[in-house]
Image (cartoon, rainbow over all chains, first blue to last red; front, side):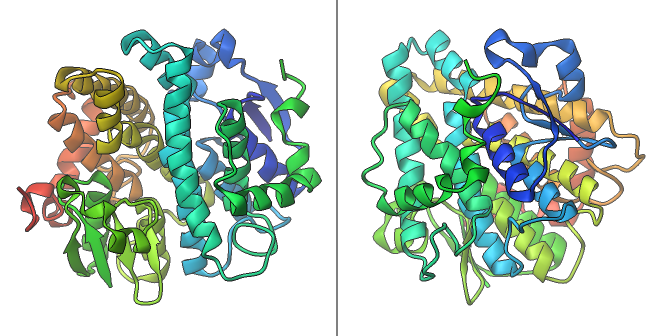
Length: 212
Length: 212
C-alpha cells in the first residue's frame, strides 16, 4: 500500500492513527499542500478533488479519510476500529461525522484562502472563524461523550476506534487555532488516553518526516 | 421509527430517498429550521448538535445522515444502498463524502448566517460562496462519475445507492443557489435517471407536507 498525505492534514493524521492501530506501515508519499503539489496534474489524475489523503491499495486509489479507514477496518487484520453492533457503529460514525463533515471542512486551507481573498478576512478573522466552528463541534462531541455510560477511557469504550481517531486531530487543530479546550473535560481525558498510546503519539504531525 | 427532518434540509432529503428505496415509511416530525425549532431544549436534548436529521429507532436516536443511511442498509430489508465489495463500497462512500463533508457543510444555513453576520456578506455574497463550493465539489464528482466504466444509469452501476442519494439533493441545492449544471453532463444524466424513480421523486422537498 502507498499512502499520499501531508504531515499537517487532519485527515491524513486520522489515517496514520488507523494504520498504526492496525499495525500497518504503508509506503508514505508527501504531497506538500503549501507548495500546491495537490494541484499538480499527476496528483489530480489520481484524485480529481485535489485533496489528500489518497491510499493506493495496489488495485484501487481510495480517497476521503473515513472511507479509507472503514476500508482498512473491513479488509485488514488487527484491532477493530468500529463496533460490531449496528447501532453502536452508527453512533461512532455520527460522532466521527460531526468532526469530519461539520467542523474540519470549515477550517480547511482552501476555505481559509477563500475568506481571506473574498471576505477581506485577515489571519485574526480566519482564526476567529476556525475557533467558532471547532468550538461548536467540540461542544456537541463533549455532550455526546459525557453522556456515555461505559467506564472506558475512550470515546465509546475501553478501546480506541474511529471516534477517537477523528477527535485527536481535531483537538490538535483546536490548539493550532488557539481555542482553549477547558470547556471539554471529557474530550480532554479521551485525548490524554489516546496520546498515551504509541499508535496515536507516532501519528502526530510533529513526528512526521515532512514536518516543517 | 420516527424521523425528525425538514423539507429543505439536504441531509433529511438524503434520508427520505433512502427510506423510499428501502420501502420504509417512518413517522415524520417536522423541525422547522427557519423558526429555530432545532435550537429548542427538547430537540437539543435529543441531538446536542442541534441539527436535523434524527432517526429515533425505538431504542436509539441516530444522527448524521450518512450514519443513518448506513444503519438502514445494515439493519433493514429492501434494496441494498452500498455495494457488497469492500473496494466498491469505499469508492461509493468517498463519492458521498465529497458531497457530505466538502460541499454541503459550507452551504449550511448556520454558515451562511455567519458570513452575513461576521464577514459583511449580503445575499449575493452568500450565493457566490455557495456556488463556488458546489461547483468545486460537483466538478470532482463529475470526473469520478465520468471515469466509471460500467454502463449503468446511476453513479456506480445499474441501481441507485448512497452516491446517488447524496448527489440528487446536492444538485437540487445547485439549482437553488443559481449554479448552472451544464458543466456536469454525467451528473445531470444520473440525476435524470434518479428522478424518474418514485423513490427519488417522492422525496423531493417540494413534495413534503412542510414545504413552504
